[in-house]
Length: 129
Ligand code: MN
Image (tube, rainbow, N blue to C red; front, side, top):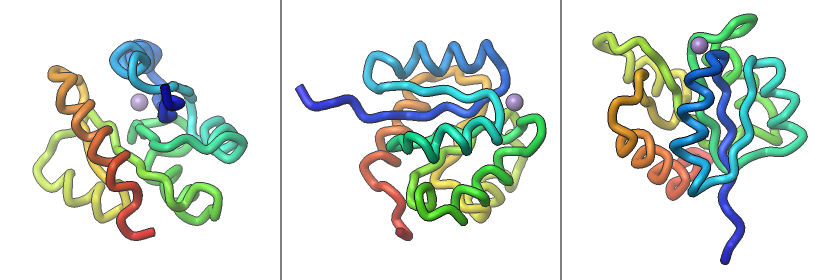
């Protein structure tokens, strides 16, 4: 059996972290972080195969964390999926333009949407890298 791919969850809400972990842990090895600064330290120490990034985080938001990742040679190539409660018109374009590889809205009603985005991004990797 090959080693499970690794997914890092960056999410400040404990319930959401738990839900994401439960949905993914049977297929993937999970690490989770509660804030951007904590995530940047952990991601550099142990880069995963994919990152799920909450947009609304204390201290620095997900867009800021992503821009720091993209400026870091160790993390620049990692696929990152934005997680956000906002589902306003234009959001998808805005987050993709910011450099996210995909976008999943919360609450996660249909786990297949999440799992589909995760699988697609893991297959594709970072298309621009
Ligand atoms: Mn949040």
